Image (cartoon, rainbow, N blue to C red; front, side, top):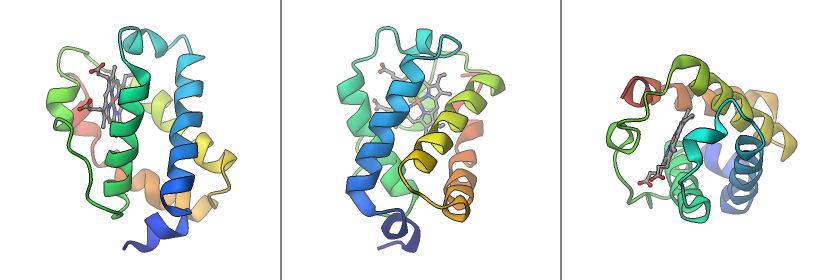
Length: 118
Ligand code: HEM
């Protein structure tokens, strides 16, 4: 079990963070068009599993790799930054400390290259 995954409150907190993140994304016209045809309930499950794994929690992500998932979307750095900011705000809103948010976001930035310009 990872210190970080446990520290932020484990699965229960992560579920809340990702639900909150999706609300923020859907309310933001600079990124919500990307998700127009997405089944958000299904995507939420995948995202929770992926982020749990990223934080060294249980290995349960069984979705597609990041480059394949985002193929054809032509995601630009500004889109990535908007989604990353919503994720960081969602963590803060759910009681994650500033230090833990920084550590989590450093891991999220590791997947940036796999997601951009695909
Ligand atoms: C912040 C880092 C990001 C991570 C860790 C991430 C992770 C994921 C994961 C795990 C999935 C589900 C994969 C699957 O269904 O097999 C997914 C799907 C998706 N992502 Fe990302 N993503 C990120 C950033 C973004 C950004 C910036 C955008 C666009 C602004 C985006 C757009 C999408 C869309 C539209 C889908 C759904 C595809 C579909 O409907 O099948 N993602 N992402």
